[in-house]
Structures are given as C-alpha cells and as structure tokens.
Image (cartoon, rainbow, N blue to C red; front, side):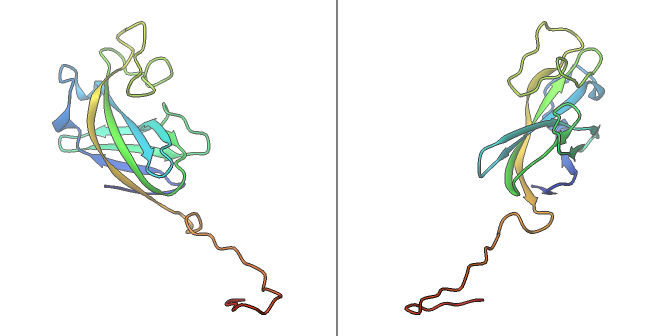
Length: 160
C-alpha cells in the first residue's frame, strides 16, 4: 500500500523489474505510467513520474502535487482524500525516450501513430495496489455546521 498526503508530492516505491515485459530494451528505455482511480467517485488521474529510478529490487517514482496537472511532467492534483487504486504500466521506447504529448501514451490504451522509435509503446500492467491519501489539514472529510438554537420548547436541544 502506498501512503500519501494531499497537496504534497508522492513518493512511490514499487517492484517492477520482476514483472518487466519488454526485456529487449535497457532499463533506461523504460518509463512507467501511473493510473490513480478514486474509490469514492471513480475519477481517474494519470501521470509519469517527474523522476524515476529503476533499481534491481524496486523502482522509485516521484510524482509532484500541483494546481495545474500535467501527465507528462508528473504533476497531479488528487482530490478528495481517501482510498485510491493504482495501476502502473510499463512504457518502452526503442530510440530516444521523450515523455511529452505525441511521444508518450496518455493512457494504457493509447496507441501513438505513426509508430516510430521515439514514440513510447505501452507494454502492459506491471503492478497494482491501493493507496491511502490522507488529509493535509484535517478539514476535508468531516465538516461541522453550527446551527441556531431553536426558538420553540417542544423538543430537547443539545449544544450551543
């Protein structure tokens, strides 16, 4: 399970090399597309990591928080706090890795045409799981509203 906090960067440590699909290219030719799905409202967010380090035992993917989301630069604005599902897809390049519009798939189903060495290809799902996104200030999930005291006396009133 990934633990994260709203309005802050997300640091993901996951195992991807054991499930690697395209072994014909070096690790430097691989990037990972992360898909977040909110359990409550089913909204979907995508992002490539703004930094990604592939190690022998794990992959470190960093995704930034920002008010202007951008899939290709690794900026998301996840809202609300709560539980999300995450899926991580392997994307590989034969030539130069360019994570930008037109060169990197925006979703797991995106196929870029015309096919070229500088265009990424989604190879498939390498890992999935749950993420808990906690509140930064503690005001998003429970909000109380102050009510006026009743003027009638035919029922019991508690509070101020």
